[in-house]
Length: 92
Image (cartoon, rainbow, N blue to C red):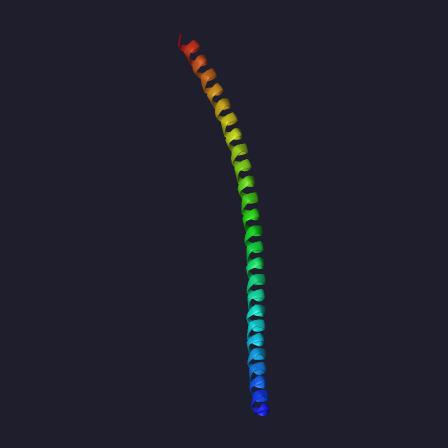
C-alpha cells in the first residue's frame, strides 16, 4: 500500500510541476506581451509628440504668412488709395 501511495504522490508531484511549468510559460508570454505593449505605447507617444511639434510649426508659419499677407494688403490698399486720390485731383 505504501508503494501505491508513493506512486500517487509522484503523479501528484509531476502534475504540480507540469502546472507550474504551464503557469511559468504563460507568465513569460504575458511579460513579453506587456513589453510589446509598453514599446508600442512609447512609439505612439513619440509619434504624437512629433505630430504636435509639426502642428505648432505649421501654426506659427501660417500666422507669419497671415501677418505678411496683411501687411502686403495694407500696402496695396494704401497705394490704390493714393492713386485714386491722384486720379481724382487730376480729373477735378
